[in-house]
Amino acid sequence: MIIYLNVKPNQRFDKVERVGDKWQVRLKAPAVDGKANEHLIELLSGILDISKSKIILKKGKTSRLKCLEIELDEKSALEKMELSINKTM
Image (cartoon, rainbow, N blue to C red; front, side, top):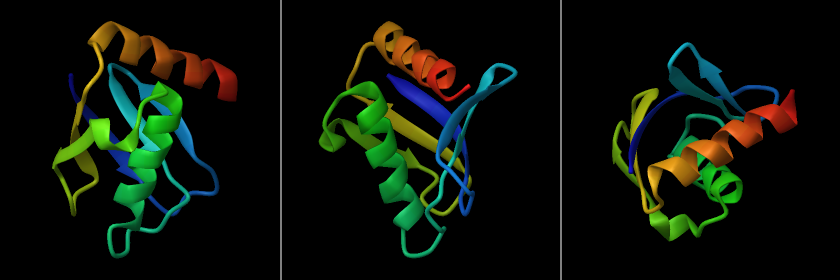
């Protein structure tokens, strides 16, 4: 599955949000030396309950718009991300 996320580093908390038809992720990690990218992969691996090696950053290493390849079927991934939104609300 390929997913595009808008990432906001240096936030007070980690949170996955749905803004319209797009996904947005707020990260506590700073956008320095790839720390935000590493934290994004750790956060998503926890939410999706898969290993970090199954999440690959394809595009956007230095951009806020990230393209990720996730080795999980789209239906399962989207359901788990929707559940994570409901848990934080």
